[in-house]
Amino acid sequence: MVATFTPPFTPASALDGQMRERGYAVLAPDQVALLSGVGLEQFDALSPAWEGLPLDGYLKDGGSYRRRRHSCFVIQDGDLSLAPHRAHWQSEEYNALHGGMHRWFEPLQEATLASKPWAPLLLALGRTASALRGERTWFVEAHQFRIDTADGIGRPTPEGAHRDGVDLVAVLLVDRRGARGGETRVFAASGPDGQRFTLTRPWTLMLLDDARVIHESTPIQPESDYGHRDTLVLTYRAGAFQGED
Image 1: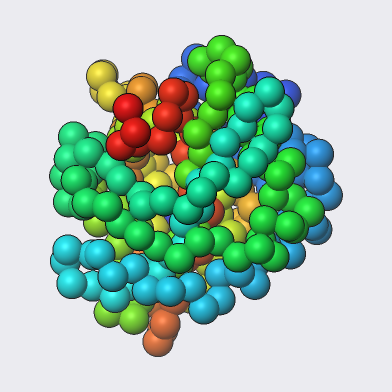
Image 2 (image 1 turned 45 degrees about the vertical axis):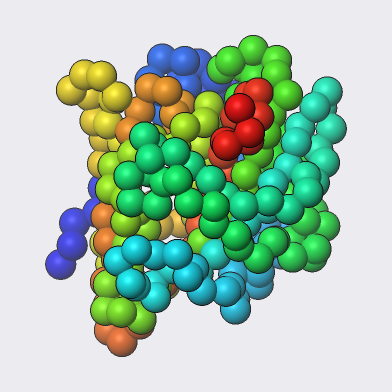
């Protein structure tokens, strides 16, 4: 038996204050719908896009437990636009395992970008980023992840506890089936404060002020033969995409 801890949920109305005070927040699914202004049932249209994701061929541990797609966007003056397809790049300062590599992944599918929740969700999180940092042009990277137990164990964060080198990180749980583990851990970047909890309900959203907190997720293991954990990770950065400064 693996113990799970319930996330410390914040109502959408208190999100900006929570982010300023603590540097992280978790919204329950109904509050994600409220934040984005889209009915919760509409989010289910996103789920099929996690079937058949291409394998991540860049894992330095040689694993085959991660599948993903990646696309980039710009939010400027309240408008969301798709950026030209580009490699995902992080410095070694923020990703000691895979930093310094230009990693090219297949882009998100058109049906995902055209789905009802897509633009409202990204724009709502852009407003959250602006409440935290002030009005900016936001450079957004979107990652679809499936972590599975095909290797016997799946690692959501093989690089360990880390920051991402951005302003705001949002992790939306899309699905979780046949898996145990995958506990989220959030630590203050400077100081003893920390939280541990498990995201279990689809469309639960975790937000992180990347300057203030470090985060990781523990490995998953199958409950029987096979399990997986699907997430949408969105990062918001002012100024430019990483690698363009």
